[in-house]
Length: 295
Image (cartoon, rainbow, N blue to C red; front, side, top):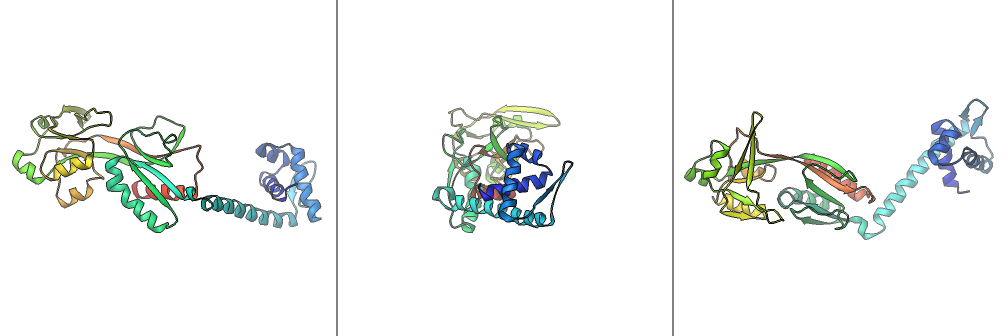
């Protein structure tokens, strides 16, 4: 018999208090559990588990052996995990997907910090506003906006993606600030174009449980929010973007929020990764860092 396997069976029997319970947990027969324990006792020449018709208990030697076995098994698992993570280059490489604006403005600095602390790791950060296929496109983890519909993936929740309407002080000095969402119809609004080619033309705001939907007029549209941010900073119009992406611009006054009495849309945001792909220590540590920063 394999000594390490027999030790694992012995520990399970000690933890659960009976051969029958250990057998059920390990998908073995109670007789096979007994054989593993007997193999160890014969090898060591001592009794590890005192068995009666009513109960079983560890002997004093069995208790000491149990403690050492637990340590050995834990160290074995840790060694295997470390070897699998370090043994091949691709296990120290991550392919990460994220929406363009969030990835460029918020996630990229975190990736840089992570790589500085993990010199053996490499990361491909792929930015796209389209709905990517995690498995077919080979992603280890992606940042996804919106409610999750596919329960076959594992996820970690991040802070909600809150949008804010804003414009440059120069634009507002010339055109004035909208008092209500419907006033946006008289303003130049910078429009986002989805990967499908359809514009994000309907801006939705709520106040006191009342929803107002406005079809905005966009003379300048782009499929890249970074372009729209640049245009907004230059006085090109009113811009709707994630508050987290614009945090520095809002703090410096380069962009000024408008319609602050109304709530702009809020979308859920998650980290998503395949349940069928092994979560290496590299992946776990990166996910934990992103959750710590954006959770």
